[in-house]
Structures are given as C-alpha cells and as structure tokens.
Amino acid sequence: MLCFLLALCAIALCGYLTATPARFFVRQDADSDRAERAGTQSIQAVETEITALPTEVQAFFTKRFRPVNC
Image (spheres, helix red, strand yellow):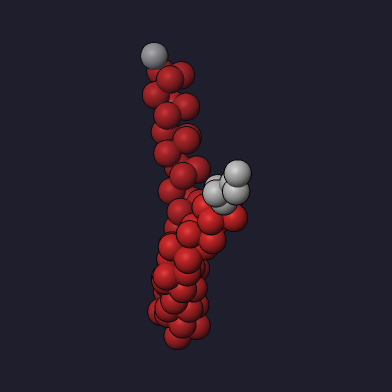
C-alpha cells in the first residue's frame, strides 16, 4: 500500500513539474496578437468550407446519380 501511494505521489509530482512550464508558454502564446489572428483566420476558413459544402454535395449527387436515358 505504501508503494502504491509513493508511486501515486511521484506521478502527481511529474505532472505538476510538466504542467508548470507548459502553463507559462500557453499563457504567453494566448496573450499575443498572433494567436488571436490565427484563431480568427481558422474560424473564417471553416466558415468558408461550411458555406461551400451544400454546393459540393449537390454537385456530387448530380454527377453520381444522373438519370439514365432509356
């Protein structure tokens, strides 16, 4: 039981030591203007893809399921 608790404390300590510098870099990156612009550009790219999706789906079904002339 003591070994289990010691291992659990070691894992928690490693997690804490890893998270501390990571938190510094994430906070520093989140405060920069470049991160905000990159997020905005990413959202705009997704909106553009979503807007074009119905046209692409319609073109796919039109090409794939053309009526056959008998």
